[in-house]
Image (cartoon, rainbow, N blue to C red; front, top):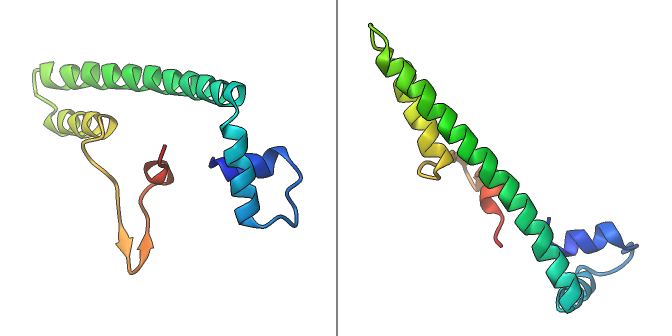
Length: 112
């Protein structure tokens, strides 16, 4: 969530202008111990995500190896595993544009 969204979640911001919320959230993030805690929590989330990505990638490699090792090679599943490994590695992006609507997955639009 954005800093402004976090501020809205943590404080009673009803009736406050967006500009005011953004300024107050920014001031809070400038406080050393608050910024340090946010960074600590972000690191924990990133570590957990990185672990699950590694696990998923390793499993896809294992499944791909099994598909290729069969007497009758299961090329379809081997290709699918390769595609999924590429997606996990960030090589492919699921994106569909309909007019002016951007359907890029929400996670891909978040800027740190």
